[in-house]
Image (cartoon, rainbow, N blue to C red; front, side, top):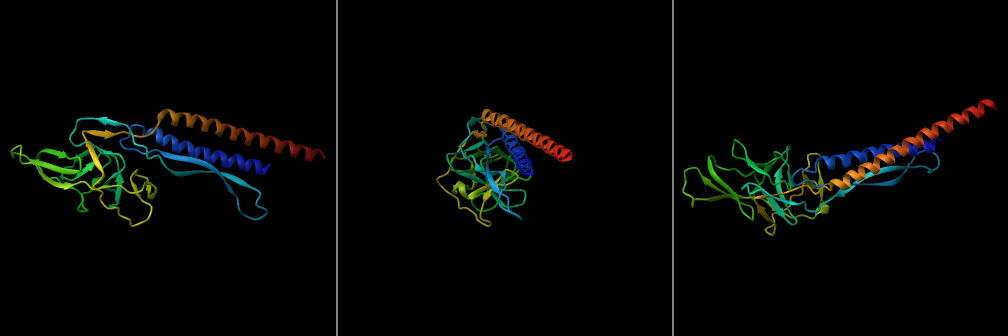
Amino acid sequence: MDRALYLAMSGAKQDMQAMQLRANNLANVSTTGFRADLEQSRSMQAYGEGLPSRVFNMTERPGYSFEQGSTITTGRNLDVAVQGEGWMSVLDSQGQEGYTRAGHLKVDQTGLLQNSNGNLILGENGGPIFIPLPAARIEVGKEGGVSVLPQGAPPDAMEMVDRIKLVRPDNQDLFKDKNGVFKPKEPGTVFPADAGVTLQTGALEGSNVNAVGEMTGLIDLQRHFEMQVKLMKTTEKMDESSSSLLRLG
């Protein structure tokens, strides 16, 4: 009885974790540049004293969906979308270099260029991109060059202040941290700028989450969870019946 109860319990636990993952994907269906998490289950041997006769269900997060999301045209000068493979380099909240495709850019009060998530945009010189204020116009070129027209200057006085660091690492070398920024799996690794990565200005890349697929997955997981709970209740009844037979004997 305890074996059946253990299997059902571990299965229900991992179903709950899988539902949390898919619910997080669904919650980010409108998040710019979001990459969906993938989940799968596999059997894992339970080691310990006695014979290795028990296994339990373990849900893993083996990777992420790197499919490109749909492009949304905005016409805004500071909205950029990475074309094809590639990433924009940013500084996360811990001051470490990371990579994102969220291209809704803005300038804070100190003149630092950042995206909508609050991550500072890195330039090819290795530091955050600084915009001299006040500025009449700011433009981002196809190759990532950031040009500024100072306030009061003639229209032909645009000057490039920096270039966004665009990289193209192997996606298998990246993992997503809790803040949604991708980082190298190997600590201390910094990927070099890649001149082959280009941007589409006046546009944003949407999330690559398939809302219908995630909702269907949630329904399947919910039904599987209910089945595991029923199995636990059935096991409890069988255990009570066994105990009654022993008392009668």
